[in-house]
Length: 283
Length: 283
Image 1 (cartoon, rainbow over the protein chains, first blue to last red):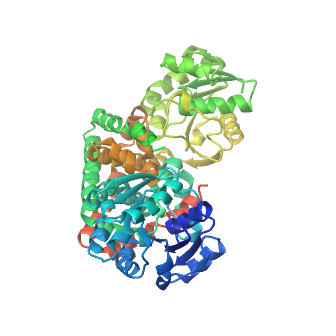
Image 2 (cartoon, rainbow over the protein chains, first blue to last red; image 1 turned 90 degrees about the vertical axis):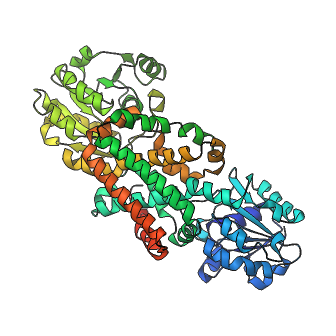
Image 3 (cartoon, helix red, strand yellow; image 1 turned 30 degrees about the vertical axis):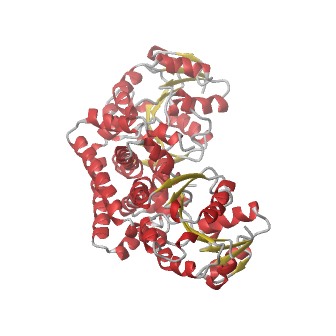
């Protein structure tokens, strides 16, 4: 792992860069980003060693594509056009079906591994990069069989060295499940934030009455719209399905309240309480 | 603050007990709880000094009522019937209008202060009690003018010693705003948990794909149904209003996705992003 290129030096790309530099001190990290300020920032923060372009990928051992999923869809084929014989490329996007279809017939398809590390924060940009972000996190790999075995190994060694837990899944199943486990949470948080902001125009009230519960539930509403809009677009069908179910559950809860059926309201909450045990499993 | 009675030795009552014992080491903390196991647990955890009954309240300097809001409504008048001349009583419930109405004409109304500390976690019972829970937290006091000045002072001294920030509000306004800032978050989390659990019957999938984002958004779904059902019941009108607005916002977001209007989807998220600045104010 000597020559590494990070395309998109934000939260995820930058965090990979920091961990790679720590695990493989001999590596040179090249940063590629359309945002010049981010490149400068990433260099001054010690995240990347130097700026590079797509023409420098021939020598790369590893290329990580960590840009919004719409940009990945456009850019990944060009990346694959420009790599060398021993280069492994992986993306880290939150949608996997469209991108797998996109490169299905690319002559260098076997150099690409479709990856989704379930890791992140609500922040973005190089400053958001943190060491150890991927430790003990799940990393979902799609269509592993489409990647050359020797090249797979390089990526898998990295994931192991970073402490990640690997799960294999097909892209369709990934996109369906992740709509429930991640995409819906973001919309629920954004709309909670919207509902409260609309009502509490006097922000002093929000400031005073918001507790840690509200803060936790609305946290994802700080996320980057530039990152999330194309995710919702690419996973439209699944996300709409989750929204339908979520809205129906909320309506049902409301109707129980309207009917003064608080026994059932209690039941609704009680039967969801075992999320405790499920979440304890994550830790 | 020598003789203190805590009615309900759970998360909130227990946390008050721990802080009071630390700030006023000479105090004796009496615990009153219908759950005998909780009394035993609270004694063995050093949260309370001894068990007591409502007949011991005559000598109390301070009585804290920290039980579910339906129980408070029934029990507070009896508490007020049994106190002494110098006793101040406050409750800590998340709804304030019903309880203020309930004791409006009680002969000892001036011994009661209506309080809502915006503090807590998703856990419950004596084991959930923690020191310093109230430090830098907002404490909302309703109808302060209905409490005898000398007795107010005792409670306010305690709140100051525990590091709380006081805000005064009328019960109607409290219940309306808190529906947005707290009650809605709980329902949004419970229904998110329900939606995901219903879909992901195979819990292994949840376990594998849940990230910190989902965990944060769904955290409040671990909360106690026994505590939350009567809150929703007492604050029914306000909570239904917040649900209507939340559901409408979710439907609107869904309709934008259905129309492929991702420019507006982006806008929706962007205009909610300033929740960042608002939440930074909380810290």
